[in-house]
Image (tube, rainbow, N blue to C red):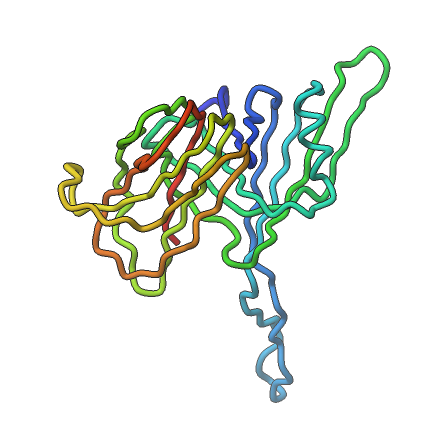
Length: 240
């Protein structure tokens, strides 16, 4: 069982990682009662059906001016922004992405204790509660065009499934445009653009427009098609 030491938490255009010491992700489906009248001598137990999926997340850590300013700016739940939780943020490793709003912001503790904060986030958009993907670009600087990060083998997108991607922009130069592209092999010799991001000029998160399957390609990567200045970004594609 892994020991949690460097769980990465990216919200919009802010890297919460080093402000936190506790993260939780709660996935569930509504449970709907489906118990009906039964003839005498039969039944007697509850029947249930699976309802809508939902997701919520909690982030707990320590107060600092940058995280307080970021958390307070969007605590009313009005922001529908991409959130990423990754066990370590290493390219090729698993991560969970969601579109969420900050519905509760708590801060403070008793005298003598470190100043704590917590954020409660709930899924907002209705498109999907959460998708599990792979980190293709961890937090890093980009200042030139071309492929960036590591190509990842997500697998094919089946009929009835969708391709998703969350892009986080932590610092900006002038402008950047990037694409998520797929290919049948890790050589990326026959690439197809699936999702386009930008042009982007400000710090923030971008949830790419989802793409319906089927897609037979199994490999995905991020490629910068235009950039002026230096940007710090991260990206996670997912299939669900």
